[in-house]
Image 1: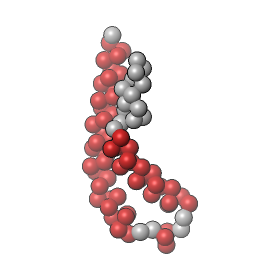
Image 2: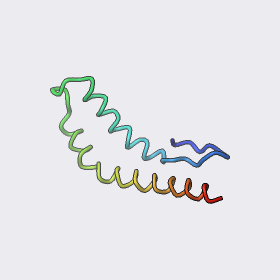
Image 3: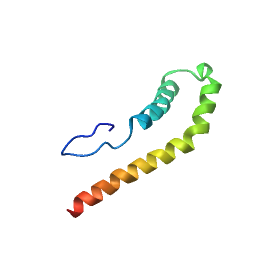
Image 4: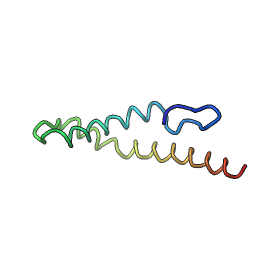
Length: 75
């Protein structure tokens, strides 16, 4: 989703957002595959504190991509 496909579509999300989202994907993997006693409270705290900002950036970038799709359908 970070790659622009020339002649097909622009990138959907930025590289920076990908890296931020990857932190949450990594945590999800930990939750699904490891016992809770191995959680790192500081890491969890950081993820919780940053989720609103990450969500806002996701929403903004998805809105931009959706507008691209709307504009494309009007052509």
